[in-house]
Image (cartoon, rainbow, N blue to C red):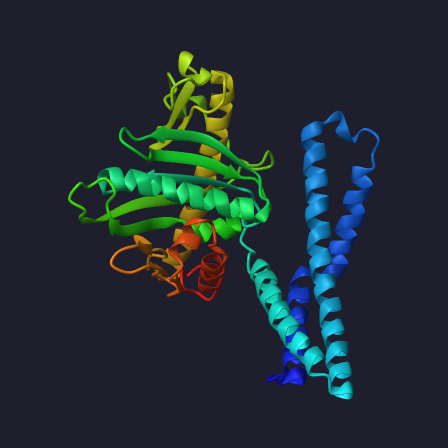
Length: 371
């Protein structure tokens, strides 16, 4: 027996869809698709492979966004018809099916609504993620590797391409640090709410006395630089060191001084790259990430100045934003949004969409003074 108020639920679904359409603007989106389609059909498109890839990727993304909105509208129409038939025929099976579909549509609308909240200057960008082990010794290094796997599995779940740019292995286990790209639209907007200090509490597998250990890891997320961004770094501001790559034995990258460590002297920002085969490639990759980090620093400085002028100097992010507790109980809890999950294994396997959605809504509502 169906237990929900179908007219009210369907009305609410339509209202949410209308608010999404007001932001996404299907008419403008279709115009964008038409323009990109025309560009993609140009006979000389692939004379510039990089530009061609940008055009085809932008076209695919725009088409996907429009299809999601249109498909949800059709699904609401279909479930409304199913309800009418179920009530007319007094068919409880149809009404139960409709109730299930309403719940699924609500979840899909909520996910799409979150996308409309990503309206920051760089939210639509791809992302560069860096994870660093903090306090906690070998457990912290192991935790850093667990977090890297979590984010890579999250990207894999969504079909987002990733590229590991740099890995610095700890002596006993885990990672000192790692940097990777997530090459998908809105990767930065989504993952930016993951930036901060993460804490792990568990019985240490590296302690022969089986004691409980607390360890920390830091997650940094910056938008991937684009050619149109005006971030120029004078050579005099950069210090570049080359060294032999480190990592598991047998890799060809270990045989030459191909790794690059780039330091931006004015800010002290350091970028290391070692996963490409040549020093030239690693240097280019390091410069790209350096530009991305400086771009975000500039954005943060501008935002801080605006807050100062407005008389609001409250920090926007705390030092510790999420706890992963494996002992004495199982719980992952975000300390900003209060969102939590008792399925810690699923979280470490990449099931973090609910945490990301809660973080985006929290930030947009003013929780980080970033609305």
